[in-house]
Length: 152
Image (cartoon, rainbow, N blue to C red):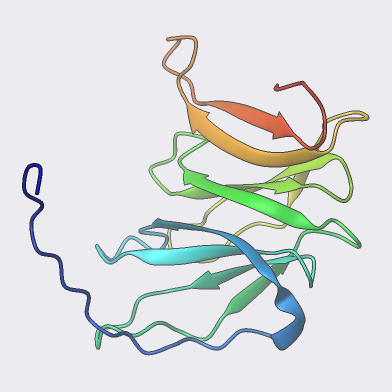
């Protein structure tokens, strides 16, 4: 054996149910309701929604809170960060079916404003990432476009 890897054990978790046809594509985690527990956001490709699962005190998750991403939007990727600098996490989703990205502004309590849409023109966004790519102390969003040689 070359080197050594620490032993890892995973605790079984209670499964949270989602709609059968939701076809989840991507998951992101963060403290969405400011309770110092990790919550989850899921891009549901099949139902044109994002789903929010808040952590409970007993190490389970709440029932899914659903937010629409629009008819035939086909959300494929999701990222969580504080995009408007209000100390509350927001969600950005790549809507591959409608050629846009959507921003859900967080309200500090695990709920979100309706989606604000930003067009990607004729390009179909598939994966997204966030970071301060140009060192201006503002979050930027990088997009990988489906079936092209382009990123944005």
